[in-house]
Length: 180
Image (cartoon, rainbow, N blue to C red; front, top):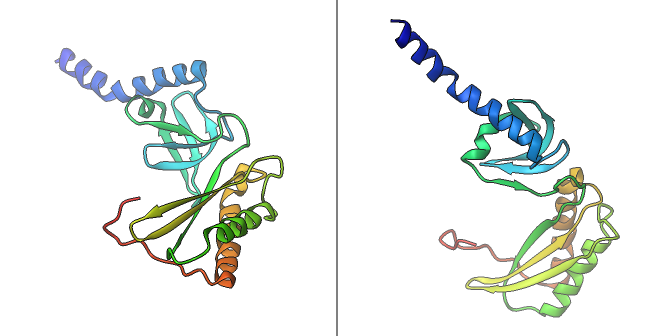
């Protein structure tokens, strides 16, 4: 009877102990710090607190998510900032292939460097790729502060679409069967 009870209690505490041990490893290895923007499994957000057993993440939807450290043993971790406030953002535009690519690329570059959220000391790159349904332009740029990443991408999207409209470039929607 005592053996069964001990086995039941031990099995019940297995995840707790695993998260506790993973927390100790996390404190030693420091794969993330408070303020980092990370993706653990399907959860993306800013780390707000690190405890011995869990890490607390504030998502873009302003939800607080507690993730046990043991999750790192079974799920990938992507750390976008690694202790820095430097974060690369990508904003995508999909256009019909009938346009002047050089003009579009220059216009999107200008949109990025004139954004009030752009980190002036960081490089801006506009990458173009031909896809089966049109052209994809990708602005790759850094906001001044990682916490402004969504404001930055929104600013690039709204002003970028306005500039593309002025140039007469026609947006195109990717077919649902195409995986990017």
